[in-house]
Length: 311
Image (cartoon, rainbow, N blue to C red; front, top):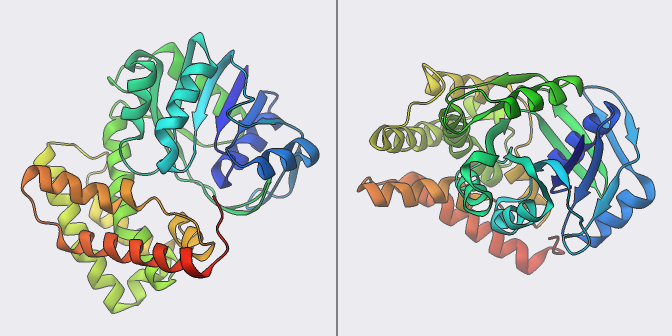
């Protein structure tokens, strides 16, 4: 099967390696020409929790990418999701489908706008990875990948993608409430990523720092209030308990912390910033999430003036 992965960062390279090793025809697409040239020349390298891997795959920029892909997996930075959605529409075969594994909200909606709801699947990855440089990623935590149809029906597309990901050695779970899965990860991201990015803590260190733990509690209360007001059923009987557990047991660097340390733009607008916008629309105050959003933007501004800039 021909698979295009849009976004050759940490998760893009991770999925590219495992899918190519399992026999799929994989092309990675990225806006950075240095990444594309490196992958075309040297292939992909992955190390970490599942050992050392090297594979040869094709790579392209959006301008040079060709169509006829059966599946498009979108794992680009969320600031680039609208452009990625348009690219996905151009790359897909007439009966192909696209799926987003990105954090935050608004990504599924962008794909639906570009492709149509019948050809879009929802998804979330609980794999964590560190981008070490063009074509080189470390797999830091192996977790499940959730997929599902937006309307809760289990179609042949979901079954096909399930088999493909499972053959690649990934733990795959299918949900009939994929929107609830996405929003659960969204709430988790709002409760962890910005705090880590501002403090330098790993996710599993938050609970051990009273000030960070207290801030997380307040940000979580706001997020849960917004979710309830929207009438969303999260895919977890007790999401707060599971998020608090992660904040004491999972020792990984969230992507937002990696981004600020590298001087890159973060995905704050699709995480805490998005929660603030949703709260305003519902008349719900979210002062702690707004403060986290403003401070991340201040950190970005500082990085822009002091660090070498990476797209």
